[in-house]
Length: 151
Image 1 (cartoon, rainbow, N blue to C red):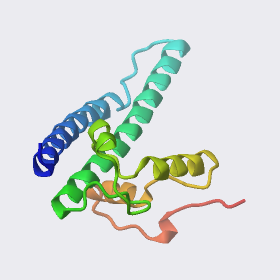
Image 2: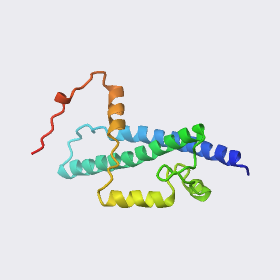
Image 3: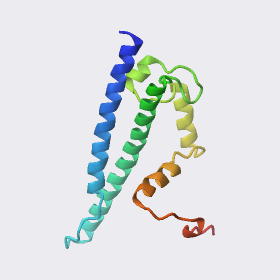
Image 4: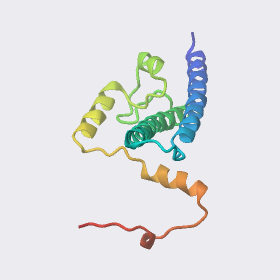
């Protein structure tokens, strides 16, 4: 199989995975909306809270995976797919076959995970959160709209 054929297959897998994740996220967004009061007891309310938190955590993981997939698709289009975004080296084809949206070689991915575990790396994507919210809100905000207590 040629490199072009392999890239085409990986591209198709990424597109299918992206569509599946988008559908899953859309479904979970519907599930994470506040439920109407059912008149249940405190245990029911606690269970609803736990379920909402689980859906929120799953959505966060799936959103991160979706961003990685979209980045990989972009890299294929640019002709830069398979290059580590950490060191610039080549990502082994075995890794790309197993994880087609991988953006780092194994060594760089391990270093990133170690930094995250030590609290040195923040994987929150505040810019994406702002852009996502901005699509639904036409009103611009200013710094005075944000109430932050530094005490």
